[in-house]
Image (tube, rainbow, N blue to C red; front, side):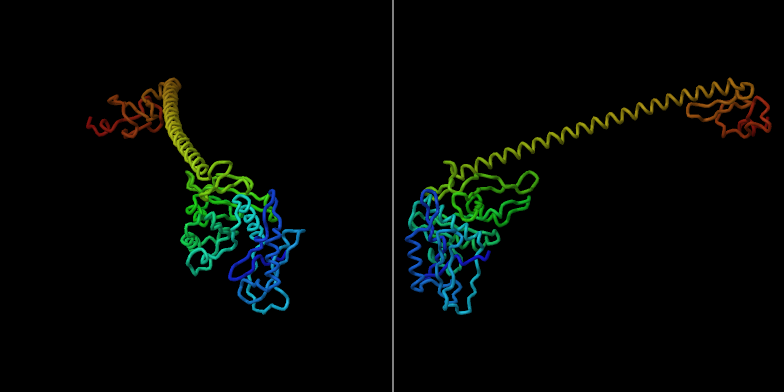
Length: 376
């Protein structure tokens, strides 16, 4: 669908298509007085293209489909120099809904749309307030895309509000963080304490919803989106001080409650993790103790087996052929000891000059070094 023009310029003031709507018994309808006013200006060639090309615009409005309402260039006035950039349909629908909301909850008749900041305070910047009520000292700034929330725009709107309470609302498509720092939305949160997300369907006020959220960093350093309030747009109210409430509770009060819950949850998670870390250390220490005990038992068992094996080997050596091997002994470490056939001293095998003889047919099978080199 081609998005049509949603605004016109009249006497140096912007007129949005939302101007013709009002709310009666919770339903948004065309305001016959506003409709007649704009049609009259249209017939008198008082409506112009907002790009400054000089083309006249006429109002196209009907009672069958709200999305048909728009402005278009009057035949014969097109200069061929138009640089108008069409506004997205979702943005147009949102502004229509917000206009109905403000009219519904504030009960005012001085609401102006698309107000340049120069008309509120002395400034030559080309930013605008989406809606302004000088009587209630309330202004609303709506942004379809969070990228439009530049530092300059936020500061200019704040510095030129001239005592008017400014409310920032962003389309619901900008929700979510995926753990990342929500840079643009944090600009809004720093200004008003929380962020407001609007969800509309076909510019129907009764079905539109809004969500108030708070961004906080969790224990892992990831950014979380905490829901402060969520419901139909008409359930959100604005008091005489320009502060928002939901369900008879101010959003700031709900914010503090949710923030405290988040802090407590983080503290609980922190204590849980500290406990788990301590338990893990205890478990690791106990496990290490068990492993060392097991290794000790294994070593003792192996030593016991070795000793038993040595004893059996000795018994085998001595009992198998005692006349041949009675001078050979093996210790628990399996080292061989020999008794010298001359001095009868028992010593390690490598200390003997002769061992076993030539034929291994005598009982004494070695002579120690001392006896070998002895002159006797």
